[in-house]
Length: 271
Image (cartoon, rainbow, N blue to C red; front, top):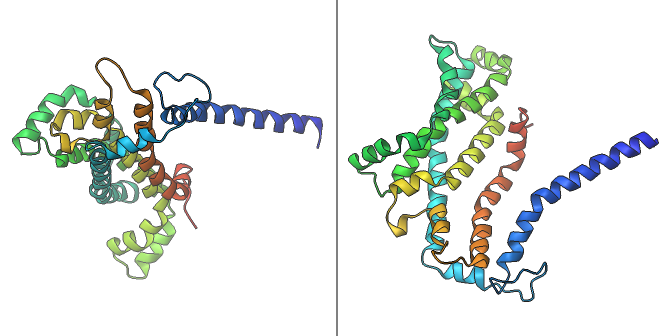
């Protein structure tokens, strides 16, 4: 190997290590803080390690319900959103019809700040009986995530070869059969991208639950984390332990769909 190639390999490895440390150091410091027995232990390696912060959270009457509520909201948002996005993205990506040029509006709708229309949203949810109800949070998640996810999946479906679809039509398949048996299996990476994006956004969303949920037993995870911040001081080990536990469901969900998500990220299909 020439000196120039060795230098290139060295700099690539160096910058990868730098980026890895930049990403991992805050997370590792959070894990370290969550294992501290004292709120004032500032040593790089804590003098005393303990799992009490995690056990106390798991015994808390509000923490586990918060995780469960967030999981339910995120999964229900995916289950409701995915069929709508599938039909809309298929029509925009594979069919020609009048008014199709208006699809660019889908990119403008996510730019609308939700807080600007928060008061009428709360009033409408109260009028239809969805105030202080997790179903109202799910409905708002679906409404505000629908435009971007539709456009995201539409771009992926537009990249699929039309020859396979035309061959299915020649063999006598209807458009619905072609979509179910031909298009959808080849669009799995696109669906994985939509599912991961939807889950993370629903999991992290604080504004809608804050505006709609007042019942302690119906709070989602962001509300539960905020409740751990004290008025006169914070228990940082407990707070960071809660943050670490909050990271686990999105991380597990991402690991499950990682292969399809990466393929969808680069616009490729799974073989």
